[in-house]
Amino acid sequence: MREEDESGIRLTGKDIMPTTEDQRNISNLGFLMLWIGIAVQLVTFILGAQLYPALSPTEILAACIVGNLIVAVLLTLMGDIGVRYGIPYAVYIRACFGYLGTHIPALIRAIPAIFWFGFQTWMGAAALNVIMEMLTGYANLTLWIILFGAVQIANTAMGIDAITKFEWLASPSILIIGVVLLLMVMNAHSITFSQLFAIKGQGGVSFGFAVVAQMGTYITMALNASDFTRFLKVSGKDQKGTWWQANKGSFWGHTVGLVGSMLLFTFIGLTSGVATGNWNPIDVMVQTLGKDNPLLLIVCLAFVILAQWSTNVSANLLPPSYIIVNFLPHKISFPVAAIIAGIAGLLLQPWNFADYVPQIMMIITALLGPIAGIMFCDYYLLRKRQLQLAELYKAGGQYRYWNNLNPAALIAYVPACISVFFLPDYGFISAFGLSIVLYYPLMKYWIAKVYPQPEITGQQQLHVNLE
Image 1 (cartoon, rainbow, N blue to C red):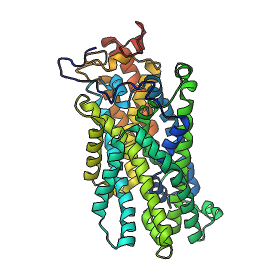
Image 2 (cartoon, rainbow, N blue to C red; image 1 turned 180 degrees about the vertical axis):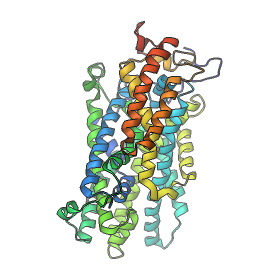
Image 3 (tube, helix red, strand yellow; image 1 turned 135 degrees about the vertical axis):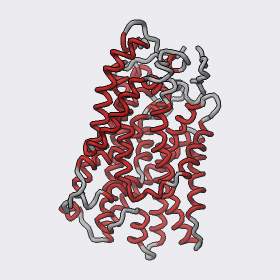
Image 4 (cartoon, helix red, strand yellow; image 1 turned 180 degrees about the horizontal axis):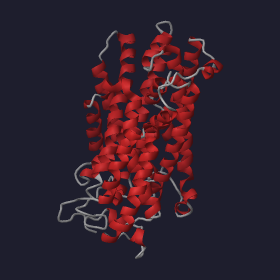
Protein backbone atom coordinates (compact mmCIF):
# COMPACT_ATOMS: atom_id res chain seq x y z
CA MET A 1 0.00 0.00 0.00
CA ARG A 2 1.44 3.38 -1.01
CA GLU A 3 1.44 5.87 1.89
CA GLU A 4 2.60 8.82 -0.22
CA ASP A 5 2.38 9.79 -3.89
CA GLU A 6 4.24 12.35 -5.96
CA SER A 7 2.17 15.15 -4.40
CA GLY A 8 3.53 14.28 -0.95
CA ILE A 9 0.11 13.35 0.48
CA ARG A 10 0.28 11.15 3.59
CA LEU A 11 -2.92 9.37 4.58
CA THR A 12 -2.02 7.00 7.41
CA GLY A 13 -1.41 7.51 11.12
CA LYS A 14 -2.06 5.40 14.20
CA ASP A 15 -4.92 7.58 15.47
CA ILE A 16 -7.00 7.43 12.26
CA MET A 17 -6.62 3.77 11.25
CA PRO A 18 -9.68 1.46 11.44
CA THR A 19 -10.38 0.32 15.00
CA THR A 20 -9.61 -3.26 15.91
CA GLU A 21 -11.99 -5.54 17.80
CA ASP A 22 -10.02 -4.93 21.02
CA GLN A 23 -10.48 -1.16 20.65
CA ARG A 24 -14.27 -1.47 20.37
CA ASN A 25 -14.92 -1.45 24.10
CA ILE A 26 -17.86 0.93 24.67
CA SER A 27 -21.01 -0.97 25.67
CA ASN A 28 -24.51 0.12 24.64
CA LEU A 29 -25.11 1.47 28.16
CA GLY A 30 -21.75 3.20 28.12
CA PHE A 31 -22.66 4.76 24.78
CA LEU A 32 -25.94 6.02 26.24
CA MET A 33 -24.09 7.58 29.19
CA LEU A 34 -21.61 9.13 26.79
CA TRP A 35 -24.42 10.80 24.88
CA ILE A 36 -26.15 12.05 28.01
CA GLY A 37 -22.86 13.66 28.97
CA ILE A 38 -22.47 15.16 25.51
CA ALA A 39 -26.03 16.49 25.26
CA VAL A 40 -26.26 18.09 28.71
CA GLN A 41 -24.81 21.57 28.28
CA LEU A 42 -25.82 25.16 28.78
CA VAL A 43 -26.06 26.20 25.14
CA THR A 44 -29.36 24.25 25.21
CA PHE A 45 -30.42 26.22 28.29
CA ILE A 46 -29.53 29.52 26.58
CA LEU A 47 -31.31 28.59 23.35
CA GLY A 48 -34.50 27.67 25.22
CA ALA A 49 -34.43 30.98 27.08
CA GLN A 50 -33.65 33.10 24.00
CA LEU A 51 -36.49 31.58 21.92
CA TYR A 52 -38.91 32.93 24.55
CA PRO A 53 -41.09 35.06 24.41
CA ALA A 54 -41.25 34.91 20.60
CA LEU A 55 -42.46 31.32 20.91
CA SER A 56 -44.57 29.74 23.64
CA PRO A 57 -43.05 27.11 25.97
CA THR A 58 -45.11 24.44 24.18
CA GLU A 59 -43.76 25.49 20.78
CA ILE A 60 -40.17 25.63 22.06
CA LEU A 61 -40.38 22.10 23.49
CA ALA A 62 -42.04 20.78 20.33
CA ALA A 63 -39.26 22.33 18.23
CA CYS A 64 -36.71 20.70 20.54
CA ILE A 65 -38.26 17.24 20.09
CA VAL A 66 -38.64 17.52 16.30
CA GLY A 67 -35.20 19.02 15.70
CA ASN A 68 -33.31 16.61 17.88
CA LEU A 69 -35.18 13.53 16.65
CA ILE A 70 -34.03 14.44 13.14
CA VAL A 71 -30.47 14.82 14.40
CA ALA A 72 -30.65 11.50 16.29
CA VAL A 73 -31.70 9.69 13.10
CA LEU A 74 -28.86 11.34 11.17
CA LEU A 75 -26.40 10.43 13.92
CA THR A 76 -27.42 6.79 13.65
CA LEU A 77 -27.36 6.78 9.86
CA MET A 78 -23.88 8.29 9.63
CA GLY A 79 -22.68 6.35 12.67
CA ASP A 80 -23.00 3.19 10.57
CA ILE A 81 -19.71 4.17 8.93
CA GLY A 82 -17.94 3.74 12.26
CA VAL A 83 -19.83 0.60 13.21
CA ARG A 84 -19.20 -1.09 9.87
CA TYR A 85 -15.68 0.10 9.04
CA GLY A 86 -14.20 1.53 12.23
CA ILE A 87 -13.01 4.74 10.57
CA PRO A 88 -13.34 8.38 11.72
CA TYR A 89 -15.16 11.14 9.85
CA ALA A 90 -11.91 12.72 8.64
CA VAL A 91 -11.02 9.50 6.77
CA TYR A 92 -14.46 8.68 5.31
CA ILE A 93 -14.96 12.18 3.91
CA ARG A 94 -12.04 11.47 1.54
CA ALA A 95 -14.46 9.35 -0.49
CA CYS A 96 -16.75 12.36 -0.96
CA PHE A 97 -14.33 15.26 -1.37
CA GLY A 98 -11.02 13.65 -2.38
CA TYR A 99 -7.70 13.18 -0.59
CA LEU A 100 -7.02 16.94 -0.35
CA GLY A 101 -10.63 18.08 -0.71
CA THR A 102 -11.37 16.31 2.57
CA HIS A 103 -9.75 19.19 4.44
CA ILE A 104 -12.50 21.59 3.31
CA PRO A 105 -15.48 19.87 5.04
CA ALA A 106 -13.17 18.81 7.87
CA LEU A 107 -12.24 22.41 8.61
CA ILE A 108 -15.88 23.52 8.29
CA ARG A 109 -16.79 20.83 10.84
CA ALA A 110 -13.92 21.69 13.19
CA ILE A 111 -14.54 25.43 13.51
CA PRO A 112 -17.98 25.22 15.24
CA ALA A 113 -16.66 22.61 17.68
CA ILE A 114 -13.64 24.75 18.54
CA PHE A 115 -15.96 27.77 18.90
CA TRP A 116 -18.26 25.93 21.31
CA PHE A 117 -15.31 24.62 23.31
CA GLY A 118 -14.25 28.18 24.05
CA PHE A 119 -17.83 29.31 24.70
CA GLN A 120 -18.62 26.51 27.13
CA THR A 121 -15.26 26.83 28.86
CA TRP A 122 -16.22 30.45 29.51
CA MET A 123 -19.55 29.33 31.01
CA GLY A 124 -17.86 26.81 33.29
CA ALA A 125 -15.14 29.28 34.27
CA ALA A 126 -17.77 31.91 35.10
CA ALA A 127 -19.39 29.45 37.51
CA LEU A 128 -15.99 28.63 38.99
CA ASN A 129 -15.29 32.35 39.36
CA VAL A 130 -18.48 32.84 41.39
CA ILE A 131 -17.62 29.88 43.62
CA MET A 132 -14.09 31.11 44.28
CA GLU A 133 -15.33 34.62 45.02
CA MET A 134 -17.81 33.22 47.53
CA LEU A 135 -15.22 31.03 49.24
CA THR A 136 -12.09 33.20 49.07
CA GLY A 137 -13.17 36.66 47.96
CA TYR A 138 -10.87 36.32 44.93
CA ALA A 139 -12.28 36.66 41.41
CA ASN A 140 -10.32 36.34 38.17
CA LEU A 141 -12.39 35.10 35.24
CA THR A 142 -9.50 35.07 32.77
CA LEU A 143 -7.41 32.85 35.06
CA TRP A 144 -10.25 30.36 35.53
CA ILE A 145 -10.90 30.24 31.76
CA ILE A 146 -7.25 29.26 31.19
CA LEU A 147 -7.14 26.71 34.03
CA PHE A 148 -10.52 25.13 33.25
CA GLY A 149 -9.59 24.94 29.57
CA ALA A 150 -6.29 23.24 30.42
CA VAL A 151 -7.98 20.57 32.56
CA GLN A 152 -10.43 19.71 29.77
CA ILE A 153 -7.67 19.58 27.17
CA ALA A 154 -5.70 17.17 29.37
CA ASN A 155 -8.77 14.94 29.84
CA THR A 156 -9.36 14.81 26.07
CA ALA A 157 -5.70 14.16 25.29
CA MET A 158 -5.90 10.98 27.38
CA GLY A 159 -8.21 9.47 24.73
CA ILE A 160 -11.67 7.95 24.36
CA ASP A 161 -11.32 5.62 27.38
CA ALA A 162 -10.68 8.51 29.75
CA ILE A 163 -13.56 10.48 28.21
CA THR A 164 -15.97 7.55 28.59
CA LYS A 165 -15.00 6.97 32.24
CA PHE A 166 -15.54 10.64 33.00
CA GLU A 167 -19.01 10.55 31.41
CA TRP A 168 -20.00 7.66 33.70
CA LEU A 169 -19.35 10.00 36.63
CA ALA A 170 -20.72 13.19 35.11
CA SER A 171 -23.94 12.07 33.39
CA PRO A 172 -26.00 10.89 36.40
CA SER A 173 -24.85 13.84 38.49
CA ILE A 174 -25.80 16.33 35.80
CA LEU A 175 -29.28 14.85 35.30
CA ILE A 176 -30.08 14.85 39.02
CA ILE A 177 -28.89 18.41 39.62
CA GLY A 178 -30.68 19.54 36.46
CA VAL A 179 -34.04 18.31 37.75
CA VAL A 180 -33.36 19.94 41.14
CA LEU A 181 -32.52 23.23 39.42
CA LEU A 182 -35.75 23.14 37.41
CA LEU A 183 -37.90 22.57 40.49
CA MET A 184 -35.93 25.20 42.42
CA VAL A 185 -36.55 27.89 39.80
CA MET A 186 -40.24 27.03 39.55
CA ASN A 187 -40.65 27.09 43.34
CA ALA A 188 -38.70 30.33 43.83
CA HIS A 189 -40.86 32.13 41.28
CA SER A 190 -44.15 30.34 42.11
CA ILE A 191 -44.57 28.93 38.61
CA THR A 192 -46.62 25.81 37.94
CA PHE A 193 -46.53 23.52 34.92
CA SER A 194 -50.07 24.52 33.96
CA GLN A 195 -49.14 28.20 34.07
CA LEU A 196 -46.09 27.59 31.87
CA PHE A 197 -48.01 25.74 29.19
CA ALA A 198 -50.78 28.33 29.17
CA ILE A 199 -48.37 31.06 28.02
CA LYS A 200 -48.71 32.17 24.39
CA GLY A 201 -45.86 33.20 22.13
CA GLN A 202 -45.57 36.83 21.06
CA GLY A 203 -44.38 36.08 17.54
CA GLY A 204 -41.34 37.24 15.63
CA VAL A 205 -39.73 33.81 15.30
CA SER A 206 -41.26 30.92 13.35
CA PHE A 207 -41.53 27.32 14.49
CA GLY A 208 -39.38 26.27 11.53
CA PHE A 209 -36.62 28.63 12.61
CA ALA A 210 -36.75 27.14 16.12
CA VAL A 211 -36.46 23.58 14.74
CA VAL A 212 -33.45 24.53 12.63
CA ALA A 213 -31.86 26.35 15.59
CA GLN A 214 -32.37 23.27 17.77
CA MET A 215 -30.77 21.11 15.10
CA GLY A 216 -27.80 23.46 14.96
CA THR A 217 -26.67 22.36 18.41
CA TYR A 218 -25.75 18.82 17.37
CA ILE A 219 -25.95 18.70 13.59
CA THR A 220 -22.18 19.03 13.88
CA MET A 221 -22.07 15.62 15.55
CA ALA A 222 -24.11 13.99 12.77
CA LEU A 223 -21.14 14.44 10.47
CA ASN A 224 -18.59 12.82 12.74
CA ALA A 225 -20.80 10.25 14.48
CA SER A 226 -18.37 7.57 13.31
CA ASP A 227 -15.68 9.11 15.57
CA PHE A 228 -17.64 7.56 18.45
CA THR A 229 -19.41 4.54 16.93
CA ARG A 230 -16.06 3.15 15.76
CA PHE A 231 -15.42 2.35 19.44
CA LEU A 232 -18.89 0.84 20.05
CA LYS A 233 -18.87 -2.82 20.99
CA VAL A 234 -20.76 -4.71 18.26
CA SER A 235 -20.60 -8.46 17.73
CA GLY A 236 -19.19 -9.73 14.44
CA LYS A 237 -22.55 -11.30 13.65
CA ASP A 238 -24.46 -8.05 14.20
CA GLN A 239 -21.84 -6.02 12.37
CA LYS A 240 -22.29 -8.14 9.26
CA GLY A 241 -26.06 -8.47 9.69
CA THR A 242 -28.87 -6.10 8.77
CA TRP A 243 -28.56 -2.37 9.23
CA TRP A 244 -30.73 -2.53 12.35
CA GLN A 245 -28.72 -5.36 13.90
CA ALA A 246 -25.55 -3.34 13.50
CA ASN A 247 -26.96 0.00 14.64
CA LYS A 248 -29.61 -0.67 17.27
CA GLY A 249 -27.25 0.17 20.15
CA SER A 250 -26.18 3.35 18.41
CA PHE A 251 -29.82 4.31 17.73
CA TRP A 252 -30.99 4.00 21.33
CA GLY A 253 -27.92 5.78 22.66
CA HIS A 254 -28.39 8.68 20.27
CA THR A 255 -32.15 8.93 20.61
CA VAL A 256 -32.60 8.55 24.37
CA GLY A 257 -29.36 10.28 25.30
CA LEU A 258 -29.71 13.24 22.94
CA VAL A 259 -33.45 13.89 22.80
CA GLY A 260 -34.06 13.24 26.51
CA SER A 261 -31.22 15.46 27.69
CA MET A 262 -31.96 18.25 25.23
CA LEU A 263 -35.64 18.25 26.22
CA LEU A 264 -34.83 18.54 29.93
CA PHE A 265 -32.38 21.40 29.54
CA THR A 266 -34.45 23.27 26.98
CA PHE A 267 -37.27 23.12 29.54
CA ILE A 268 -35.00 24.43 32.31
CA GLY A 269 -33.83 27.26 30.03
CA LEU A 270 -37.27 28.39 28.89
CA THR A 271 -38.58 28.18 32.48
CA SER A 272 -35.74 30.43 33.60
CA GLY A 273 -36.49 32.79 30.72
CA VAL A 274 -40.14 32.99 31.76
CA ALA A 275 -39.29 33.42 35.45
CA THR A 276 -36.40 35.86 35.26
CA GLY A 277 -36.19 37.20 31.70
CA ASN A 278 -32.51 36.19 31.78
CA TRP A 279 -30.84 33.66 29.45
CA ASN A 280 -27.61 33.41 31.46
CA PRO A 281 -27.86 30.29 33.68
CA ILE A 282 -25.26 31.51 36.16
CA ASP A 283 -27.09 34.81 36.67
CA VAL A 284 -30.34 32.85 37.07
CA MET A 285 -28.81 30.67 39.80
CA VAL A 286 -27.37 33.63 41.69
CA GLN A 287 -30.62 35.57 41.31
CA THR A 288 -32.76 32.62 42.44
CA LEU A 289 -30.67 31.51 45.40
CA GLY A 290 -28.97 34.76 46.36
CA LYS A 291 -26.82 34.57 49.46
CA ASP A 292 -29.42 32.73 51.54
CA ASN A 293 -28.47 29.29 50.21
CA PRO A 294 -24.71 29.44 49.59
CA LEU A 295 -24.20 25.67 49.78
CA LEU A 296 -26.97 24.93 47.29
CA LEU A 297 -25.68 27.70 45.03
CA ILE A 298 -22.21 26.14 45.04
CA VAL A 299 -23.70 22.72 44.19
CA CYS A 300 -25.62 24.23 41.25
CA LEU A 301 -22.58 26.12 40.02
CA ALA A 302 -20.55 22.92 40.28
CA PHE A 303 -23.21 21.37 38.05
CA VAL A 304 -22.54 24.11 35.46
CA ILE A 305 -18.84 23.26 35.51
CA LEU A 306 -19.49 19.53 35.21
CA ALA A 307 -22.00 20.01 32.37
CA GLN A 308 -19.58 22.08 30.29
CA TRP A 309 -16.72 19.69 30.95
CA SER A 310 -18.68 16.58 29.96
CA THR A 311 -19.83 18.15 26.69
CA ASN A 312 -16.56 19.80 25.76
CA VAL A 313 -14.30 16.76 25.98
CA SER A 314 -16.62 14.60 23.87
CA ALA A 315 -18.35 16.94 21.45
CA ASN A 316 -16.05 19.91 21.09
CA LEU A 317 -12.48 18.66 21.46
CA LEU A 318 -12.42 15.04 20.30
CA PRO A 319 -13.89 15.67 16.77
CA PRO A 320 -11.60 18.59 15.78
CA SER A 321 -8.64 16.73 17.25
CA TYR A 322 -9.15 13.87 14.78
CA ILE A 323 -9.51 16.44 12.02
CA ILE A 324 -6.25 18.14 12.95
CA VAL A 325 -4.50 14.74 13.03
CA ASN A 326 -5.76 14.11 9.49
CA PHE A 327 -3.94 17.20 8.19
CA LEU A 328 -0.55 15.65 9.03
CA PRO A 329 -1.28 12.11 10.31
CA HIS A 330 2.37 11.05 10.31
CA LYS A 331 3.47 14.07 12.40
CA ILE A 332 0.60 15.14 14.65
CA SER A 333 -0.62 12.81 17.40
CA PHE A 334 -4.09 12.95 18.94
CA PRO A 335 -2.89 14.52 22.25
CA VAL A 336 -1.03 17.28 20.37
CA ALA A 337 -4.11 17.88 18.20
CA ALA A 338 -6.31 18.21 21.32
CA ILE A 339 -3.96 20.89 22.66
CA ILE A 340 -4.05 22.79 19.36
CA ALA A 341 -7.86 22.66 19.17
CA GLY A 342 -8.27 23.74 22.79
CA ILE A 343 -5.92 26.71 22.56
CA ALA A 344 -7.61 27.84 19.33
CA GLY A 345 -11.02 27.72 21.03
CA LEU A 346 -9.86 29.98 23.84
CA LEU A 347 -8.10 32.43 21.53
CA LEU A 348 -11.34 32.88 19.53
CA GLN A 349 -13.02 34.34 22.66
CA PRO A 350 -16.47 33.19 21.48
CA TRP A 351 -18.14 34.51 24.65
CA ASN A 352 -18.25 37.87 22.89
CA PHE A 353 -21.09 36.44 20.75
CA ALA A 354 -23.21 35.11 23.63
CA ASP A 355 -26.25 37.24 22.76
CA TYR A 356 -26.68 35.61 19.33
CA VAL A 357 -26.96 31.86 19.95
CA PRO A 358 -30.03 31.21 17.68
CA GLN A 359 -28.38 33.09 14.80
CA ILE A 360 -25.13 31.18 15.31
CA MET A 361 -27.06 27.91 15.18
CA MET A 362 -28.58 28.96 11.85
CA ILE A 363 -25.15 29.68 10.36
CA ILE A 364 -23.84 26.32 11.58
CA THR A 365 -26.78 24.56 9.93
CA ALA A 366 -26.08 26.37 6.66
CA LEU A 367 -22.42 25.34 6.69
CA LEU A 368 -22.89 21.72 7.76
CA GLY A 369 -26.28 20.73 6.30
CA PRO A 370 -24.90 20.31 2.75
CA ILE A 371 -22.03 18.14 4.01
CA ALA A 372 -24.51 15.87 5.79
CA GLY A 373 -26.50 15.57 2.54
CA ILE A 374 -23.41 14.78 0.46
CA MET A 375 -22.26 12.14 2.97
CA PHE A 376 -25.70 10.51 3.12
CA CYS A 377 -26.00 10.46 -0.67
CA ASP A 378 -22.48 9.12 -1.16
CA TYR A 379 -22.65 6.38 1.47
CA TYR A 380 -26.25 5.18 1.16
CA LEU A 381 -27.58 6.15 -2.27
CA LEU A 382 -24.44 5.76 -4.38
CA ARG A 383 -22.13 3.28 -2.63
CA LYS A 384 -24.90 1.32 -0.85
CA ARG A 385 -22.78 1.15 2.35
CA GLN A 386 -19.86 -0.43 0.48
CA LEU A 387 -16.37 1.07 0.73
CA GLN A 388 -13.01 0.15 -0.73
CA LEU A 389 -11.38 0.62 2.66
CA ALA A 390 -7.78 0.25 1.53
CA GLU A 391 -8.28 2.98 -1.09
CA LEU A 392 -9.12 5.52 1.62
CA TYR A 393 -5.56 5.21 2.92
CA LYS A 394 -3.75 4.87 -0.42
CA ALA A 395 -2.36 8.08 -1.91
CA GLY A 396 -3.11 8.19 -5.62
CA GLY A 397 -5.99 5.74 -5.16
CA GLN A 398 -9.51 5.86 -6.50
CA TYR A 399 -10.49 8.93 -4.45
CA ARG A 400 -7.85 11.19 -6.02
CA TYR A 401 -10.40 12.67 -8.49
CA TRP A 402 -9.26 15.96 -10.09
CA ASN A 403 -6.06 17.14 -8.39
CA ASN A 404 -7.21 15.23 -5.28
CA LEU A 405 -10.44 17.25 -5.17
CA ASN A 406 -13.91 15.99 -6.08
CA PRO A 407 -15.62 18.64 -8.27
CA ALA A 408 -19.04 17.03 -7.70
CA ALA A 409 -18.89 17.66 -3.96
CA LEU A 410 -17.67 21.23 -4.33
CA ILE A 411 -20.31 22.09 -6.95
CA ALA A 412 -23.08 20.59 -4.79
CA TYR A 413 -21.92 22.25 -1.58
CA VAL A 414 -21.96 25.93 -2.50
CA PRO A 415 -25.57 26.41 -3.75
CA ALA A 416 -26.91 24.11 -1.02
CA CYS A 417 -25.18 26.23 1.60
CA ILE A 418 -26.46 29.50 0.12
CA SER A 419 -30.04 28.14 -0.03
CA VAL A 420 -30.31 28.26 3.77
CA PHE A 421 -30.21 32.05 3.79
CA PHE A 422 -33.07 32.24 1.29
CA LEU A 423 -35.17 29.69 3.18
CA PRO A 424 -34.12 30.17 6.82
CA ASP A 425 -37.22 28.50 8.25
CA TYR A 426 -36.44 25.34 6.31
CA GLY A 427 -32.69 25.77 6.17
CA PHE A 428 -31.60 22.25 6.93
CA ILE A 429 -34.15 20.70 4.59
CA SER A 430 -33.05 22.90 1.70
CA ALA A 431 -29.33 22.39 2.36
CA PHE A 432 -29.61 18.65 2.88
CA GLY A 433 -32.02 18.05 -0.01
CA LEU A 434 -30.39 20.31 -2.59
CA SER A 435 -26.93 18.85 -1.93
CA ILE A 436 -28.31 15.36 -2.65
CA VAL A 437 -30.13 16.48 -5.79
CA LEU A 438 -26.92 18.03 -7.14
CA TYR A 439 -24.36 15.51 -5.91
CA TYR A 440 -26.07 12.30 -7.04
CA PRO A 441 -26.16 12.92 -10.83
CA LEU A 442 -22.79 14.70 -10.84
CA MET A 443 -21.16 11.76 -9.09
CA LYS A 444 -22.96 8.91 -10.83
CA TYR A 445 -22.97 10.17 -14.42
CA TRP A 446 -19.80 12.24 -14.49
CA ILE A 447 -17.18 11.63 -11.80
CA ALA A 448 -17.66 7.86 -11.47
CA LYS A 449 -17.17 7.51 -15.22
CA VAL A 450 -13.99 9.60 -15.32
CA TYR A 451 -12.54 8.29 -12.03
CA PRO A 452 -13.82 4.69 -11.65
CA GLN A 453 -15.70 4.01 -8.42
CA PRO A 454 -16.38 0.24 -8.23
CA GLU A 455 -18.82 0.68 -5.33
CA ILE A 456 -20.98 2.90 -7.53
CA THR A 457 -20.60 1.22 -10.91
CA GLY A 458 -20.31 -2.36 -9.61
CA GLN A 459 -17.62 -3.16 -12.16
CA GLN A 460 -15.36 -5.23 -9.90
CA GLN A 461 -15.21 -7.19 -6.65
CA LEU A 462 -15.11 -5.01 -3.55
CA HIS A 463 -12.42 -5.32 -0.89
CA VAL A 464 -13.76 -4.13 2.45
CA ASN A 465 -10.78 -5.14 4.58
CA LEU A 466 -7.72 -2.94 4.84
CA GLU A 467 -4.88 -4.57 2.94
